[in-house]
Image (cartoon, rainbow, N blue to C red; front, side, top):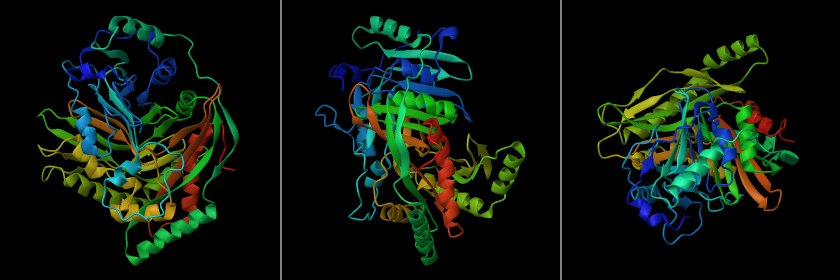
Length: 476
């Protein structure tokens, strides 16, 4: 972390005069490539779909979170400790866009699980790649895009040393022409950690638990992994080319990175016109592949919209999210939008629904996160029972899969995705050409009506666009 951070906690003094000329505005993925040599890059990228309004790239945080011990800024292990770190910052001016400086990064599924009263199996294996449970940091320097207005601003902290010269260097770096991704290569095949027959057995174990009355639904996943030579930022550029999702993103830390093409919102928290904080969560349940032509695509949409199993699955999770929000919301403020609603992406269609609520006056973003994290759509119902069964059947911690990437700023506003459709990068060799273990997990919600082999095939449909970005047709 930066050792000159002590003065920065007195105030976040930002300079808003740095709008990039319209003809020299890089895309978020291009800016990531331009700033690849800066420390601790963290990108929230609205690349397509709805909404597609803002993107945000943080760099050189004043405090970094990556699991490494630090006497001056201990690594947070709870949402309360993360809140305490953020309270050391305050803003004295308002930069453009949705972010005014604050926490920007990713929270692992296991970070949330550790803060819940769960009876986890004693032999639960750790995340096989040894990644930290919280990454990112406290950012006062960032680039923000307004895709609707087609503007881009560089926001920097005036309290940093050599601010003016630094601004010039950053403007020059972001205005580079012809910056592209470098080559990366897949080493061998990507393979499944769990065979199709074993995943089918686990699906049947969930159905047996449902038959006993232990739970109604659980989201079961398996892991696919391989090796890649190159750099994570170049893989992310390829992922953007293959996918255009509304909640994409990238976070890098020493020895690791995550690259997400998530379509799913966990949480959006904004002030309304009355000074109240309004929370929205948008669970996804119900998935079907895209058709090979327009006619088949329409038929598949009709099949999904008419699926009693998928509608019931979404209804269960919407009810769970209503309860999660209800614990921290004003009485009578929880409401559900259009049900169900169709969303379409590169390789699949989904059913979604919006659940909204106005928070109680004494509830903040971190208390809201603690109430709804991890998201119900990737755990199940009831949440704690499903998480316990997931841990027993999957047999290892999930790491960042089904965690969240997003921000909480100094005003208390927040936005987080759910880390599905996500590649995890763990450098195995640090050399002239880095070699990394790259993994992804794919899963789906299991109910009594699930057909085990169909559920296994659905996971491969979800993996398709991620593997395609790597030039891989499927697990070997």
